[in-house]
Length: 194
Image 1 (cartoon, helix red, strand yellow):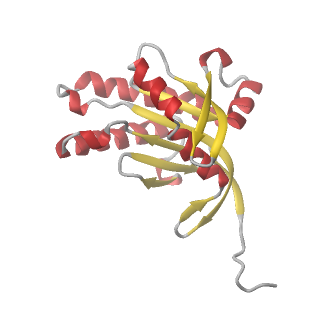
Image 2: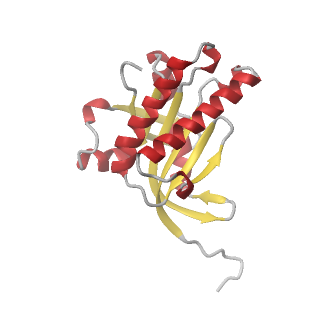
Image 3: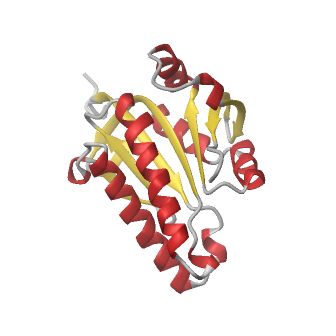
């Protein structure tokens, strides 16, 4: 056996990443305010969906959060978590006076096998998650809609969720993803009335 090989221990996980568009264009006080709002909304949404925040492995991304969920299922993420996140964003935006403190959020959801080590997680599922989040077509859809929330999910998540009727396929739009070496299609949801 080659001693240089690291023993991989892949585990299937649900992966979520979110990002605040236009974060770097805000002044420092606004960045602090919207980061605090992002964490408050995300933690509250997880708890309301029955996913304990302390049980989630999460990594700060400056203008977003990367979350690895060990035990929550799609039925948790595609219903209560999204509903609570959207409600939290809308409550926050109604309460602020300064437009720089308003929150718009992009969220990506994928599932797959990842290798977890002391530094974090790695794997194709992680790469795809962040390619989805950065897809120009998704960014453009959200910007043109002026909505305060948008979700993009991988094709595998979409097929599973529609197959089990966790989501309504009419709410989602097929979207091309062409980021770095990744060329695939995914599905976006941008709720009306945002």
